[in-house]
Length: 536
Image 1 (spheres, rainbow, N blue to C red):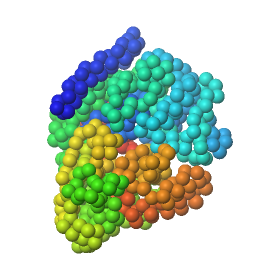
Image 2: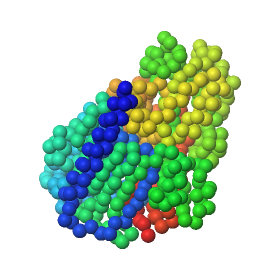
Image 3: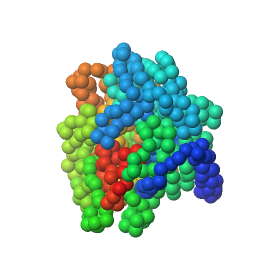
Image 4: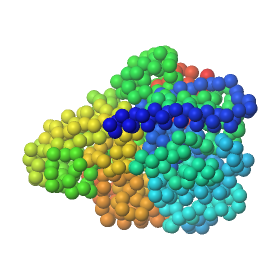
C-alpha cells in the first residue's frame, strides 16, 4: 500500500513539476534566444529535490548547481574564482567581507543583493538544512550595504571561501513568498514549493521536470556571465538511465551526448569507437562502508540483544576480509585506487601513511569474530544505492560470506537510499564521499564528528563517536597555523583508523564517455557545468 501511494504521489508531482517549469519559461518570454545547442547528459540517478539546501548529495548538485550560484566558483582547474562575489577579504579574525556583483537578477527578475546572502546563510543554518557542514563555523551574516555583506564566524576559519563554493544563493523574497523559508524536511518526507520549483541567478532556467526521468534546463538570456557563444550549450537535458546497458546503448545510438557514469566493463569498447571519446581521471571521492555503532540492537540483523558493530574486533574483521585489490582489478577493471584513507591526495591533510590498507587476512577475521562472540558469524543487511556501485557491493557480500558474515544486499534508488539514511533506517551501508572544500575538516565534520554535537555529524548516520576525535576536530577548525593544523588532522585520523570507525575501500576513477564533438573538462570533483560545456 505504501508503494502504491508513493507511485500516485510521484505521478502527481511529475505533472506539477512540468507546469512549474513552464511557468518559469514564460517569465523569459519575449527575450530573444540563440539557436538551441542541445546537450543530453545521461547519468544513473536523479536529484533528490530542487531545494538547494535540503540535500547535499552529489546527484542533487548536478542539477541545482546549474540553476543556482554561489558567491565563489571553482573553475575547471578547481581554483577559486569570483561568482556572485567579485572579491572577498578576511578583515578580522572572525569576519569575512564580500563585495557582491551588481546588476544580477534572479530568473524571476528580482534583483540580487546583500539581503539574499544574509537570508541564505540563515537558511543553511536551519535545523532542516543538509548544508550545515559548509557553515559549521559560521555565526551569521550581516548586511553592510546593498552589495557588501560580512560573514561572521564563531572561531577563525581560513577556509571559509572554499566552503562557500557550495552554498547556493536564493532569492529571499521569492522563497518567503512561497513559504519555503526553511529547507525542505526530507527526513519527514515534507513537500515544499522550493522542492518542485527553482529560481536562481545561474546560466540555466528550469523548463520542465519529470522526476527519475528527465529534467530540461534552458539558457538564461539575462545571465550576468553574458550570452552563449556559437558552441555553448543552450539546452541541458538531464536524463536519468539507471540501467548500465541502456545508458551505454543510448550513447551508441545517439540518443544522448554524454554519459556521466560509465561501467568499467564498457570503457575499452567505447574507446575503440571513432564516433566517441572517453576521458578518465581520479575523482576527489572515496567509497567506504559505515556501520550502525549507536543502537544497542541492529535494525536489520539476526543478532538480538546486542550490536556486533559496537565491537572494534568485528569492524576490523570486516576490513581485513575485503580484498579491495581484487575489487579494483576484477570488478572495476583497474579504475580505482585502493585506500585506507577517508580522503584523497587532493585534500589538505592527506598523508600516504594513512592510506595503506591492512593486508587481507580472512583467518584472522574469523578469529576476531569468534573472540567478539560470533564464532558462526551473523547476518546483516547492506544498503547500497542502485546504479552507483552495485557490483562492488555484490563482491563485498561474497567476501564477507567467507568469514561468516552473511549479507542481505539491498540496492535501492538514490532517492530512497538517502531518505533511509536521513531516517537512520540502516544497519550497514556503502557510500561515496567527495570533499568539495578540498580540506579534511569537511569529512571530519560531516562523517566522523558525533551527531549530537552542534554542527557536527550531518552525514554520520552510523553514529561513530569518540570524544577525543571531537575535541581534535574543534581544534582543527580554530587552528590557523598550517603545520599545527595538519598535525591535529593526522592525530584525529590515526584514532579513527585504529578504531575502524568507517572502512574506506578505494578512491574512484571516473570515466566520462561522450560524442566526439563534445568538449568537457574532466574535473576531480566529478562535476560538469553546462556553462563550460561546448558542442562543436
